[in-house]
Length: 406
Image 1 (cartoon, one colour):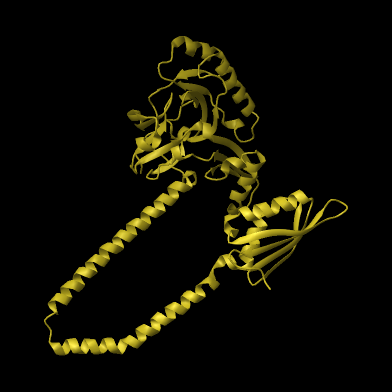
Image 2 (cartoon, rainbow, N blue to C red):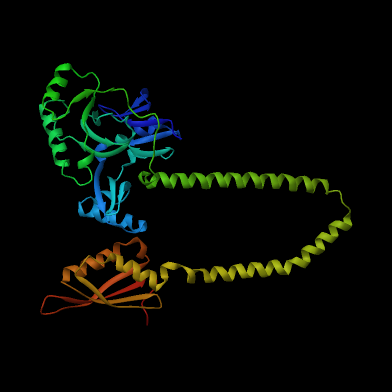
């Protein structure tokens, strides 16, 4: 279980902490975490969108697709592309359906990737949770509001105003709480008190902020960086870290295999040395056995050569079904219809109809730019524009370094 956390600093950069103890500070996350495997990386709040949603009763296998539909509905799907991530957890189950908290993390840049990290989690979820249900802290120069209920982070928002704790901040927090009061999931889980955890906060700033709030305001421990027990979420692990872990396992297995091979080699050499003084008759017998096996070895070599000649026939990128699937993925959302798909001697021919000539040209450009189909040269010809401006087109793809069919 990881014992340390790399979290966003209140002002700038990153802190390496253990509970309330600060162990280091750096502008660079990767150098701060170094190659330690006991560090949890706290994802900054400005990269996170968190919302609650109710789903009707259904099979659990459908939850992921239904939640992604909700992400798209809120216009957050672009944040989940590339190295972006979506995490969700159930907060309530009833006969009428299930309630979920969904976290959408924007794609993380290289500066956030720590291949050796023990895991990733929202920094707000790593923080020590307030008794009143709400906490306000400063994170990389901005104020952040976090709402908690029974150990779960239920709402997270970076304030739009300045980083100062003033009447404007109090008004924005009050408006957030007011807007959440009508939420079917969060409305019954709103906080009773707000804890302000900001270091060196002047009394006048606290009093002025508290006067503008609709709920009581307490002063929290600004050094309470994280809770004693650090949690991680597998769905929040960047793809780059997953690949690094996989490569590390492969490397470990390779080293183990080499070690075993070395031991076998040493044993074999020892055995050869011990038996090097056997009689010439034994040597002659071995030579005779080698001669007996020679034809079999030759047959194995011939079979290997034949297999290499056949190997291109098993390359899946030449399979028509795979090619059709990749071509279909290049089609725009609407406006283009493929009416005929044919392959002959590795030459692909497509016939279809586009809403206009521009869409047909866009399709050929997309096909030319697909790395999965880069072994082909694409040509758009015989485009015929109808009276209604639709364009009937024919596309032919020829394998590179090969001519078309005769």
